[in-house]
Length: 314
Ligand code: UDP
Ligand code: MG
Image (cartoon, rainbow, N blue to C red; front, side, top):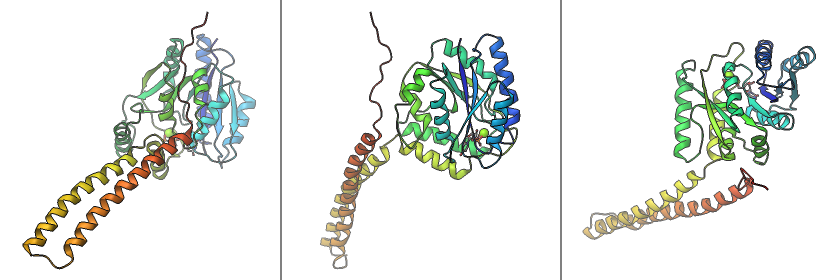
């Protein structure tokens, strides 16, 4: 029997928790009755240092309802860290874990499909949104621009996939080997490389409470995503340096011609030529230093270098 853990990070979610708990409980009951999951399956709430009654509610549901368990973080560490804490707790207790938001914007009727794919031997199943009608225009445009930009920088992210995702126990084990501090799970999970598939669903509106992701958090999340996965910005500096150095040669020729045709102020030629040349050289040097910094950066991360997917034994 498959033991399923639903990992739900919660930050100041007292407004949604009662409803979320009853909906998830109902869903788990149905799946249990249908024989899709085993009786050890649980909802694992992660209280991300909330300042309202979230933890009290989690404790209450833990006492009063069959499925609910929870962990409490000492501080507010942000969605990604809270999620990781939950997944790492679930890792040793479950066969597979599905992460979802406390506001149930991700359609929980898709849970059956996640499990079907899991039973089909997928280690990772990504939930992908069909359309983004319910988002504001700004959120939609910024999110889609972000995915495209990430692709451009060579980061492998699944288009329109947030953190609604199933991971098998061994995928979670693999995830635990990535020790980086600037966490961007959407970029990390594809690096695990086990068999994966997609489930499509419609995203609903938050049914109560407010978004805990203000613009400021969204921007720093996006920047984290880029700088944790790509050293291309460093390479761009290098290339820019080469370009400016080449241009400076053209500039030098122009300055010399102007000098000899005589229509310049004294001293102009040397000044202009050196500004361009030095500017270009400086950028190039920065780029070279950046190249080494990039290497240090990936060494310091100490990500696992390979993963054995299968092992044939006698
Ligand atoms: N969340 C969290 N810590 C934070 C911010 C958010 O654990 O610092 C949780 C929040 O409780 C919710 C999920 O992350 O379960 C997604 O947040 P939200 O629904 O506010 O984001 P949005 O859907 O607006 O992007
Ligand atoms: Mg939400």
